[in-house]
Length: 189
Image (cartoon, rainbow, N blue to C red; front, side, top):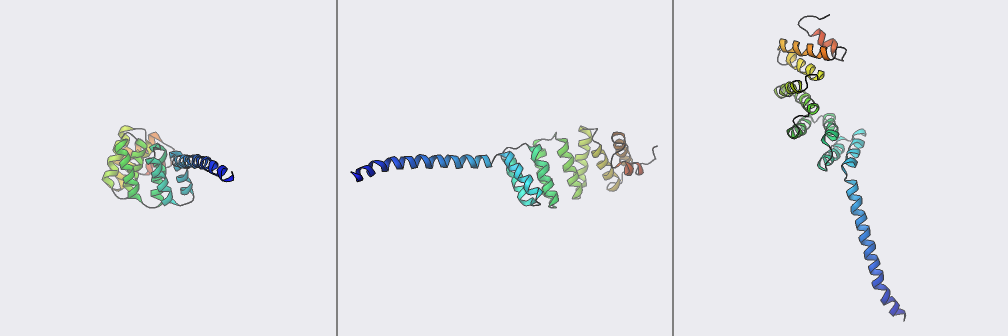
């Protein structure tokens, strides 16, 4: 009798274990999906960046982008991690890649321009800055950056003067106002 009860219970126990195992597998799979959610990956990237682990932060930011996170939410953090790690070329490369997908993104274009300037690719920097001021004429920082590039690299004093004046019109009390005024061909009151 006892062996008959055990024989009857074993399939029921096995079925119960199978259901329990299947449920556990589904739970684990759901947990993995939840952990791979773009917003969680972005949050982890920010956490690692705040701890100074920029290599790991870059990995999480890249995974967030690949997972479907909004470019404008992730890209500034990813590029900042590259910059802090002195990986300027990586910052330029990723910025250029996303600019190809979103050429109208003025903020990204300005950031890419400053990165090109930082690594000595002045022609590329100028091309991007010219486009920024064309597409967004009120972008005072782009006018300033273009003025500095014209003055310091190309020694085109007339163009530098023009962009310094545009900067001062747009941001007369800006952080670069004193330098802009000192760089004008003629002083302005």
